[in-house]
Structures are given as C-alpha cells and as structure tokens.
Amino acid sequence: MALEMVPKDLRHLWACLLYQFECDGFDSCNMAYDSTSSSFDGIIVMMSPEDSWVSKWQRVSDFKPGVYAVSVTGCLPQGIVWELKSRSAYKSRDTAIKT
View (spheres, rainbow, N blue to C red):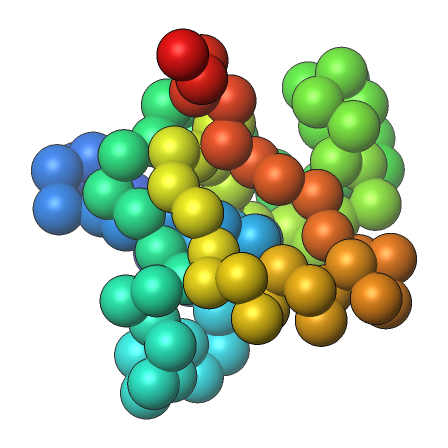
C-alpha cells in the first residue's frame, strides 16, 4: 500500500458500507451513492494486516492493505444485502444504536 492512499484530511471522505474508502473502479460505479456514507467513526490504516495487532483486534487481519472506517452508519439497498447474504458475504458495519 502506498502512503498516497492515507488521507491527509478527514473532511469530505465517504466510507464504503462494505469495504474500504477507495475501491478499484469505485468512482465510476453507478451504485457509489447507495454504497457509501459520510457518517463514520475512526479510521484504520493497514499496511501489513497480518502483522498488525489493531487488525487482529478489529478482526480484519484477512483484509487487504488499505484505509478502512472503524464503523459506518448507513444501510445498503435491500437487493444488495439479499445477494450478499445468499453468498454468506454480508456483515453489517452499522454500529449505530437503534431506538
């Protein structure tokens, strides 16, 4: 992972509801608006996930190097959730308290 990926400013960042801040080809994705949120808490920058105690503590040591939000508030469109659940690939990152 190149240091250029590490954000210098947290303003105007959007976190992906599934993975990390920047995904290959994400800028041209038609679903970018539905799949991101500007409401997130904390960031984790992982350069060597398999060696990082933070990645082990957050249970993301099998993720690729990158910049990740600790938690993201928002909901994916139901169709995407159903498809991901059918592949056993869905884990909500929304840690907001529901009332």
